[in-house]
Length: 266
Image (tube, rainbow, N blue to C red; front, side, top):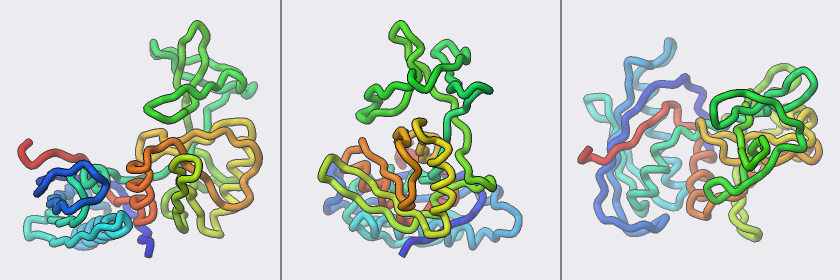
């Protein structure tokens, strides 16, 4: 069962202590994670107990979706101890240490429709749609601005919204599938009521890239070839390991707090 979390952001500090090593996605490891939310940032209308319960529930669901398990204990000092079984330390750091806040973004454009870009020197410029290129970036192909002379710039992004200003987030996800026939690919299915929003966004972005961000990171930016009518988007180019972790995060729902991760010895 997917949990839906609609909470404002508060800070979190994660410290990780692992029993056993192991670099596989799953193994015989038991990893203990201590989560310390910054409870002084809990927004109005939410109690500290509610915030702690939501964090604990998301962590348990993520572990289960990665075919492991986790038990959580809320401590008297406001921290949460998570003991995860069959999840290696490096995987636990990524699984529990990311908010998994998904946002759709579209390129910023000027009055004549050119795409706005940031050059390596920090200056801004505009390019035509035909100058969007897809070099390999970190193992995947992400859209960049071809500024000429072998110089690449970054697209300037802004929220992609429906006709009434609606945004698509992880809260509107119904299910996430994983296929491997042509490399690991996540197929994100949105709830029925979100389909019209996705259709409106994709109609406006035909021949333009759709930026799919997880937290502040661009993970996919496919060019939209036609309006999306089936309520689905795909995220390709990830390793199988990273795809499995992201699938578990998106299925479990967004962590209601931004997080940072450190080793227990730090």
